[in-house]
Image (cartoon, rainbow, N blue to C red; front, top):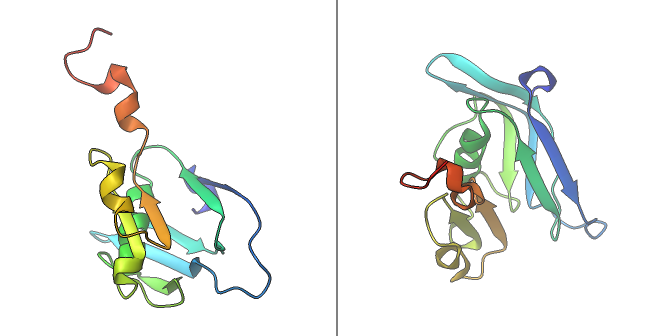
Amino acid sequence: MNPGAGVHVAGGHASGVGAVPVLEPRDAAVRVGGRVLWSGVNLTVGAGEFTAVLGPNGVGKSTLIKVLLGAVPVAGGEVRVLGARPGQAGHRIGYEQQRLLIAQALVCRPRLLLLDEPLDSLDLSHQGGWPR
């Protein structure tokens, strides 16, 4: 999220003018174990947009999702999720971790769906027991 950290954010599909953003970090920073993982994050994601956060291991992609869920606090700046502070959107967020079924996240018809490494299980070379 810091341009020098090797993280890239890509997205598409414009949202309606005047709509409350689904995600909105402003100058956000996260510190884990005394180490700043990322800082200066500014992003607006509107309803109907698809956004991907890409980068190498250890730069804080999964930590970003934990921040959005309210499981990890921001060390600086501000984060809004569906117009509220992280952790307050509750049932309006569907969350899918890499080895869970996506159907579990979709059952409650969330307004926001967060996917953490959703394609990882499709890479057979990373699954034990498969020939490489």
